Length: 117
Image 1 (cartoon, rainbow, N blue to C red):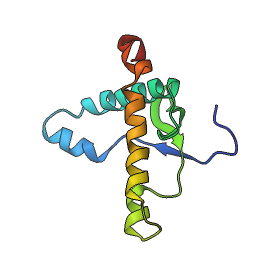
Image 2 (cartoon, rainbow, N blue to C red; image 1 turned 135 degrees about the horizontal axis):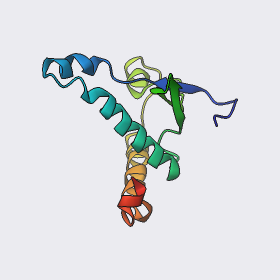
Image 3 (tube, rainbow, N blue to C red; image 1 turned 45 degrees about the vertical axis):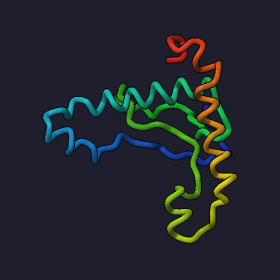
Image 4 (cartoon, helix red, strand yellow; image 1 turned 135 degrees about the vertical axis):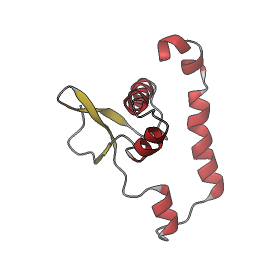
């Protein structure tokens, strides 16, 4: 359940990828790729970390997953940097980036990989 005071973003399938897959007669892979992303987000939601985006669930229309409901943010990293909204302290940024990587490769994720996924 999404708290009512939280900004959310609905991430939809990467439809730009459809053309590329279609050129290789692989367009049927797009729903499978999106489902794999849902499965990863479901697993991550059971092993949360403060530097990994919050996942609240799926948006379903007519029994089909149409989007992932994730924590909303005011800016993407690219927007933040390219539009001069702010600057990044490289040391703090790298620590913030390494922390979830260590979390993903930590005991909770690696001891039981089959039950994780």
